[in-house]
Image (cartoon, rainbow, N blue to C red):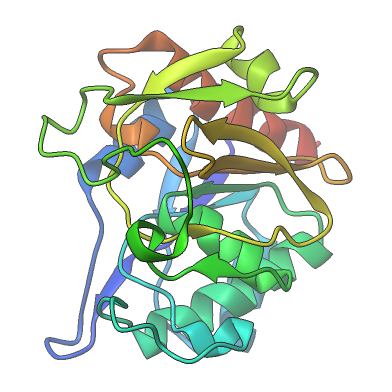
Length: 238
């Protein structure tokens, strides 16, 4: 049986509605997994459900409340979602503790870092000091790569991608700041923004700041990331 991959959803608090872009589910399916959308149910029941899954993907979305990493809200902080923050951070911490394969995308990389005790730039435009300026909120089509990311030698992500640097899309204004153990920095953009974190102590725990699910149809190396994740999930169920 194909591995079952849980996919977190955005949650509209006002409308009481869950939703997720089709691209996430389609990328997992194209890589050989079966996508399972995760509901906002009691956290203990969610742990029980997650224990039956072979991996979890944390998807993109809004800003994370800085109270989770001990900071006051910056004036440029965007909309936060208390329901989603609480569920995803706890679920991610559970997944890491139980070595459940994890892939984080955009907000997902930030959830991974915060869940393990790391911090974020609440707004890179005002908080990150760099001689290089990169637009991380592109207006180009979602599949189009807008800037380069350089990988660390020997990193898992460089092995997956088969090269030391790639061009990626970009739709964010928050980013990983202080990296929590057991993660290490595996890739940065030229302005210093952390674009990849990964754990070498877990079966698979990789977070990327870009959106490979929007790119994989046009760029085969982005599908390779999903295939590597699904393969790790397949191994974990054996």
